[in-house]
Image (tube, rainbow, N blue to C red; front, side, top):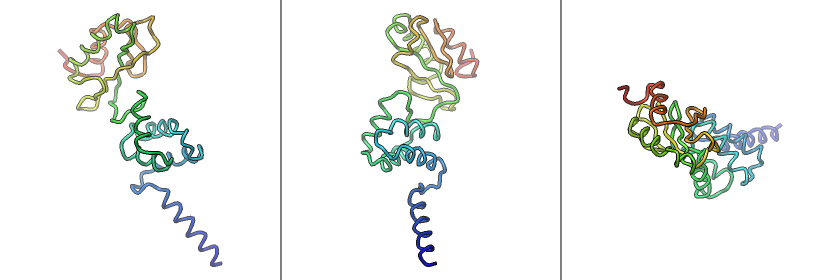
Length: 179
């Protein structure tokens, strides 16, 4: 009888130790993902994808949690999170606009499209508008060279974009000056 009580207490202690102090249930989702991967360090990218899916972006607290659980140096986790452009360390806007800066797109004018979008929105690449409505990002290459210059609006690729067309699209979202 006493043995059962001790085992129950030990199980509760282990469970409490594995939970995040904040009580945020999204950390439990990360724990399940890491457990499924048997806490292998080579599952880092998979775990970071799940973290971003759960939290919306990779805040410092989340990176630290993943580093501790996978027994990796924080510098390695941070390095992976900043190397891949699919990961974000800042919250994203309600809408996203990604301008391709690959060679074909750049030669065909994507630099001018990006500049016009920056001027219109008042933000630079990698930033989100103050109202949280739009994030402006760039990509090295979208693989859509045949329709250069390409811009991705909320996950939909638009080809042969001019600065005016890109601005018209974000005006539909209610972004920037409406003049």
